[in-house]
Amino acid sequence: MFELNNGQMRLPTKKMRQLVIIILVIIIVAVVYGSLPGIDDRHKRSSDRYIENELHMLETKIRDLEKGPQKWKKTYPEVKFLTYKDRKRILITGGAGFVGSHLVDQLMLQGHEVTVVDNFFTGRKRNVEHWMGHENFELLHHDIVNPLYIEADQIFHLASPASPPNYMYNPIKTIKTNTIGTINMLGLAKRVRARLLLASTSEVYGDPEVHPQTEDYWGHVNPIGPRACYDEGKRVAETTCYAYAKQDGVEVRVARIFNTFGPRMHMNDGRVVSNFILQALQNESLTVYGQGTQTRSFQYVSDLVDGLIALMNSNYSLPCNLGNAEEHTIMDFAKIIKSLVKSSTSKIVTKPAMQDDPKRRRPDITRARKYLNWQPVVPMMVGINKTIQYFQNELRRSRHSERNFHPPEKLL
Image 1 (cartoon, rainbow, N blue to C red):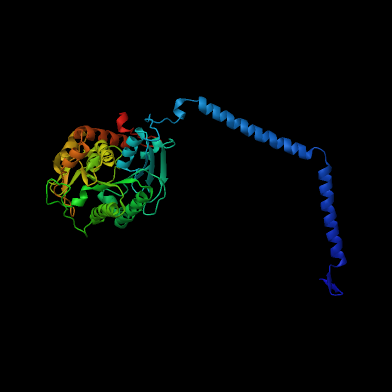
Image 2: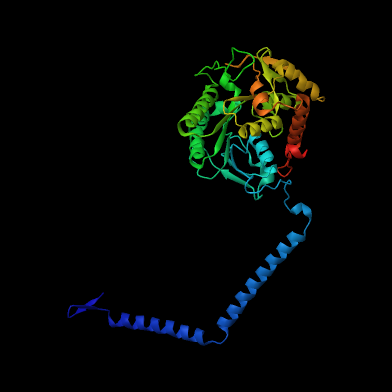
């Protein structure tokens, strides 16, 4: 196809002519279009008009939104103003969960800057959606099994599945959250010199041989039972906290939380209160495991939140029980729920007892009264009625847009 002449490669004459013709055509077209008057100007003017129209439409929409009905504007509960000296940067792990979201409400209303970290294993965005967009609030989708690098003055470490079905569903995840996750949060507290509060649990006492349970009691726990992933995970978390306190001087607080209930509980989390209320509202049999003689003590969530904040801001660093000293058998509690849901036709049935289910559980809250000046103030019946109302509203929902918003407790 190519010819060689004196060692050089040369295109054939026919191919050369075709190439020249193509180049000439391109040049002619460019010259003609370039010389036609007004084409570029018209195109430019058309683009300018399009941009002006789009900008005008956007400005109109903004003005309409600003002047529009109040329902289209997002409003927030009124928060207290704090100066930079009093305002704290507070991190809450598991802040989109049941207890965490109520803690968020209280701290936001007090005027602090709150950052919520949650992997949404059991937490839900809707629990904190009423604060989204507020200048003092931030939500991070993050798993604390992985390191986190932010600034904080206080850390409320609440992250962990807390109901038996949830922590038994993924026991390894539960162990990692309470061990590796706690180490990561303590490392963060050490780096930024923050105070850390660990949300421990009454489960560290296991199936107790001492009643009521004082903080000095070491517990009676099966290390390889179905509850061990949570029970032993929290026990290791407590050990880790005090190791960091002793070796590195990290300020730690440990709250041993007893059974808590209230609005925003997940309806299917498998806990006593949610189980009984849901079964009663749906006219299903109230399921009692064993003979129902095992006892529990139930506190309302706002009482717990007050206790957590009081412990965080106190000078007391040893473990502290937070719970209600009023004790009820599970059978009695089932009867109470059934009587409060007046429309219910449910019956109470018994099933075989669950493995390692504690027989008695009641906190000794002497430390909390003495060092925190704290004790539960919400009567159990009042709290249960609020929780029943919340569950009723949840069951009425038929569309996603039908929000069951539970406002911060202090605004009720």
